Length: 240
Image (cartoon, rainbow, N blue to C red; front, top):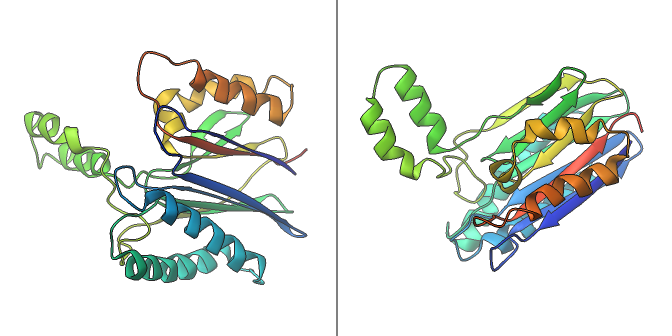
């Protein structure tokens, strides 16, 4: 397996995203955290979360990744909430690909996991934000379209994240993937700037994982007509 990590501060004054990868004999662990913008401790909390998770994973014998992440995320959430007194938080997206090709994941917030396979791009995680709640309420007829449009101004507000001292939502899953598949873990800066579905052609161009990642980040850096959020992503090539 091969991986690459790319990051871009965008037009923000501070890079609040953090990412890391750990390679073990039985597979590869990857994590992306996006500190909550506008919060005084967002960047610090995302760094602490990544460092703590990497340390705990590296020193664990993990036979149940989702169980491991559920326990560690709950513990970290309490610790961060206590230390920073709920003044800030971070998304959390972690994935593990073992040597048999089984992909497991755990997610809080709106960082996303994508799988690029022979059938194109597939988003494997759900966004934990107010938009998701609004969309469900609209589909169920519990709010009007007028109410939806008014409330959509707050649509990107997170409804689950690390540091609130009590996790309300999480997204977990497992998938057996093919050796030709590519896994993408990303903060919201990437998919809000460029449609991730469009990266399939770049990834399949045959130029290699590093070249594909350079081109993907380049497509974000080219944007000049609007503000660009922090952007951080990890690409993992399974059969390389």
